[in-house]
Image (tube, rainbow, N blue to C red; front, top):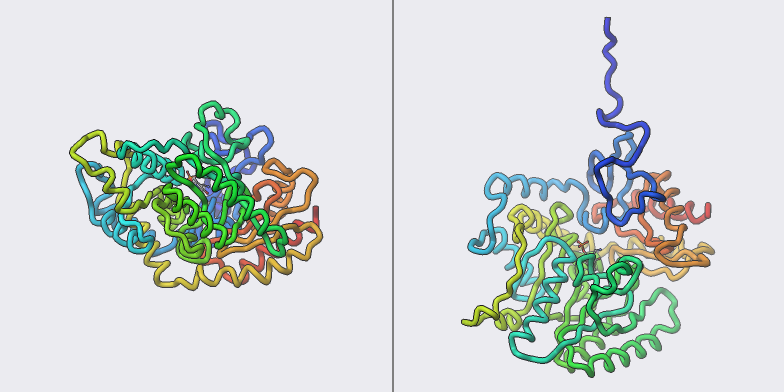
Amino acid sequence: MQLNVPLTMPQDFDPQPRWHPHLWHPTTQVATAPVPLRAVAGRGALLELDDGRTLIDAISSWWVTLHGHAEASIAAAVSAQSQALEQVIFADFSHGPAERLAERLSALTGLERLFFSDNGSTAVEVALKIAWQWWHNQGAERRQLVAFEGAYHGDTVGAMAVGARSLFTTPFDTWLFCVARVDWPHTCWHDASVETREQAALEALERALAVPTAAVILEPLIQGASGMAMVRPAFLQAVEARVRASGALLIADEVMTGFGRSGALFACQRAGLQPDLMALSKGLTGGFLPMGVTLASERLYQGFVSSDPMATFFHGHSFTANPLGCAAALASLDLLEACPERYGSFEARHRPRLEALSRHPLVRRPRCLGTVAAFDVAVNQPGYLSAVGRQIQRHCLAEGVYVRPLGNVVYLLPPLCLDEAQLERCYSALHSALDQL
Ligand code: PMP
């Protein structure tokens, strides 16, 4: 006789979590990191694990899950596109989803030309290469790039070079080309010294721009990976004025801030900037598929149109303009356009809760913009390697909330579908995590 016992756990549930023998996880030190959680499903703001737990994804799975996991209209659009045209080489071909996406993003950003790639780093690489070659095509001698302290633009070599030097870049420092670097006068609530620091940064920028400069690259309003470091719109407007006066190009890396994250559809709009180039990824496809795009002005595009083959932008990726990614991006834009209040009102939802949290004695430098709320935890040794982040993560996990602090910088960056009760849970988990430190 056999007992018919119903399965209570998913079939591949592993009662003793361990590292998979054939996987290599990103930015993970296996010797010290906890074994990865195993996800089996995602819906809305929730991730379901193979042990039956559900977690609130309070950081949108590395800032990509824009509307929520498994958003039905995006899933349907991807599914329909996969049955029509899943992929086609984009060198000798074009297709409707790419054309529609280019038309819509051009109208929304004021940048007429769209170049596809695969992720945020490549979107930045493409922006740098377009800027550099544009000057080269004109025979102009502009050999300098300017970037900001603390910047993070991706993990490929060019993107690393314009990013700040850090523990991420140390082994590769000799590979990375030189960049003129200007302070990023990041601010927080009740910041008394911001104007002085902004002024000093603008003076440093003017000095840097005295050297003929091809382009200045920045993350508008929020530097993400360096610790949700926020600057004021007026500072960025003053930066743009100086960039324009010098004739250099302005590159906005909106890989993190794009698609409502800053409270406006694009942070450049909220900051009052009109860049020459813009890099987008992450939320572009609503977090469904890896895709990056670089938008460029018509003026730049025309600098590559020539009977001389050497003026061509010789850059392309196998999956350029993948139709599934385009279909996801179009469906995601539909959602953003249908409900702009979802991202427009998020800051007002964060603010009172962050205010309450900021009264905790361990909270420093509270700040909030759009869907992003952040603070520093007061520790002796701040920085990316601070153990406090892991402690807070562990505690929040026990409370059913997934966060991934950047060292001692704790932040929330949730999907737009997060409801009030879920947001409340995120803050209460952070509060009790701080209490336990
Ligand atoms: N730029 C910014 C501002 C980013 O935040 C990131 C990723 N965190 C990147 C570029 C790189 O994007 P990806 O990880 O998709 O290569």
